[in-house]
Length: 246
Image (cartoon, rainbow, N blue to C red; front, side, top):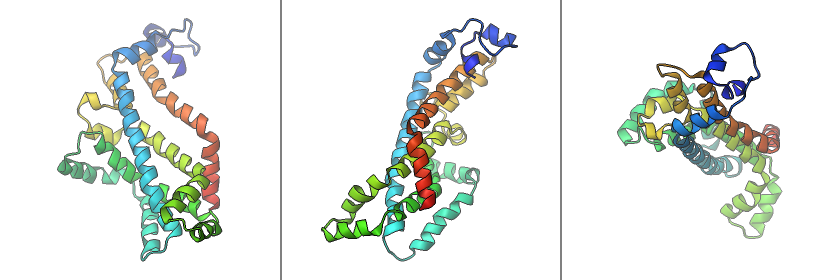
């Protein structure tokens, strides 16, 4: 992919060698400037950013309730979330599309964000609940003795101590959302709302496939994911270890 992104169309069709004879940035620049990839990139950032934000806000609160608070039906509801891990996402595609159409969300970015947030619930609740349970109860009791409210305990005690777990969830949410294709393909018809996977598909579905541009577009898609993981790798590993121990 990296090699093809720096080749001309003629050179990549010639094949037979991995390293480009005359490396060129023209393919990447052409793909970025002439194929609306700036718009696709922005749309992917919007959808991914809103999804990650929604997941962290909604399921951090839900997981805190499961891990710390006591209320009727807590265990049943928690295991119901966990059981959803075994439900293939493709089986709910048609109901989601029908529901979005009735709600007027089909063909919008929010029509992607809400199902993505909902789809990450099982794994997120499982990992964050385990992370919150690993926090010593004595810290919460000491904060309550000092007069701290439940919200203050959550914000000042539990969130800082479980930061690696939240970063892990952010990465596990951002990567599949950034790469998601099926629901985006079914939902979006307006090209101005396309995300990067749909932009990449438009290159492949043309009458004449320019493979060097397809590989350049793939490289554009992959680089942010690699950069995020490389930057957050330490927190990601610690978050997984902490959640498993919890």
